Length: 305
Picture 1 (spheres, rainbow, N blue to C red):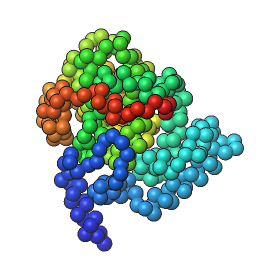
Picture 2 (picture 1 turned 90 degrees about the vertical axis):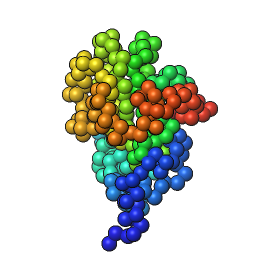
Picture 3 (picture 1 turned 180 degrees about the vertical axis):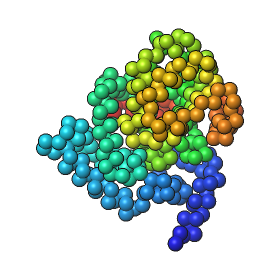
Picture 4 (picture 1 turned 120 degrees about the vertical axis):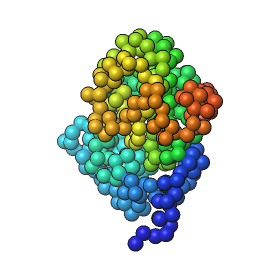
């Protein structure tokens, strides 16, 4: 039997607004009841399953990382063997409490750092702060109606010589790590909006296929993050060439979550309230204060991740 409380929470989930969620920045002090219900329905999370899965995952990390195990499993043990359950929980939530898949995601996490060391060398808040203060990317200070964190990237004024592709990826890596400390974000995930108005031939020719693959790898099997959708707006005709380079690197699940709108924004506004979005993303809100975003992410902190 489904309790009245569960029925009420499921009903609430069908009629959420941006006001029904906690803050984007900082820790989650208390999960909303409807988010707890969402975790149960979508992620198979209950108090009992959480406790047993954490125990199973801890054992798997130790057993597979010991002795003559594979190198990545050893790296997982080294990275996570002494970490608190709160960190392991991120990986379980990202893989719906499937312990084997959560461990595979941990291997992906350490693999990504091994394959792309240039993204993580001296990765302190100060190293990426100027990139985030320039708006690459922007984190909206409010969640969308589904509770997702909204990341914005406006390509129009992006100078690849001034801020390189790797520098933007480094900023994304820091933002993901910081915002995933919040349990609402672990459960509800992220959504990306990319405004391609002003995407030039110089942009298209300046971004290498290897860099695009690196970006896709970041979104697939490398972070305990739920990427729920990618929205592309105002792309020019030659965007298709760049997108066709990216597609072979994308798994079907991510491909299905990419929405290419062009200038037809009816579907876009079904997902996003215009009052949430800043003016440079076709919304009614003021353009985001990028320096304020950086301050909310980092505060006065200056430690390597």
